[in-house]
Image (cartoon, rainbow, N blue to C red; front, side, top):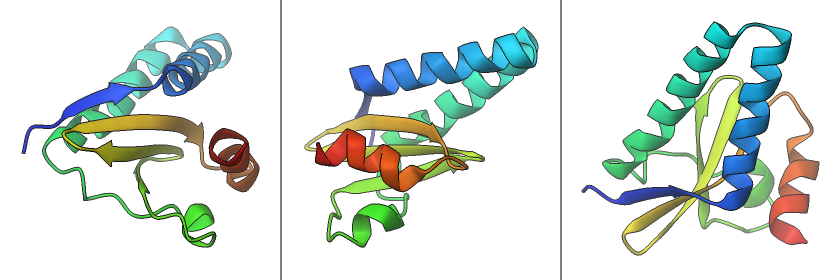
Length: 107
């Protein structure tokens, strides 16, 4: 299929914060590993954009234009518009995802 995969400004900021946190509280090597795995997760969306599940927090509200893939514990939420996959949120799934999603998508 070969769609273009782009990160929104919010998703870029999410990823930078995650990687910075890991580098500071674990190790730079672990941060590089996690970065490679997260990037791999969303880069595969180029060929398989419909493989992700609907985030249950959004589905419960009737919102079904977003999907998600995982590199546990991280949730990568995206939306396909035309021939572009927009990664809109990257977050630790152990956090209060409902609150994060409400802030990001409903405000």
